[in-house]
Image (cartoon, rainbow over all chains, first blue to last red):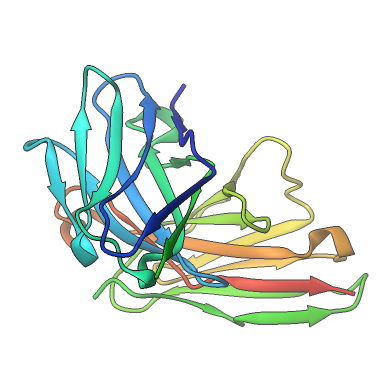
Length: 116
Length: 120
């Protein structure tokens, strides 16, 4: 069964500092991995995805994520955090096939707070 | 491109009444749509998978007679919460999965802005 873990409920960083939001996964087969961001009372906005190819994936708003197969991780990073990055972040894995094809399994979410 | 809308954005209804939430893919066709429920500051819980022209597939523990899903066209799916109770109050989010051509093969999901349901 597919699963995703975000070990940190909250991450706090100072504006201008680098940020990392952690995600580890467990899948059978090749993983399709996603990061989404959610602002209060809003739906999810797509940030980036890893399907295949280069392990470093660049996405929206200056975010990037590194796929690490040996560590089964897909951590979200940004070199310099902004206060406006404060939001709820979700890592997700897509089911590769069978009756669950296309379904997304989400991590529990990480609240990122960037302090001025 | 790839915009998904939901209507209404928020709704308040009385206990025992039914409420319908619409999910539309505005600029692409979506054979499959998904309905999620989210509690405050919690992850999304998949409720059901909605396939155009066929019955929805419900996740374990989700009452299909309470949460009626209809996917009558390639751009519209509806979720009807029947005989609503206060415990049904939640944030409901839909997503639409783009077809092969629109997503470049990744079958990416695009999410609606969500509907806040409050049952009094």
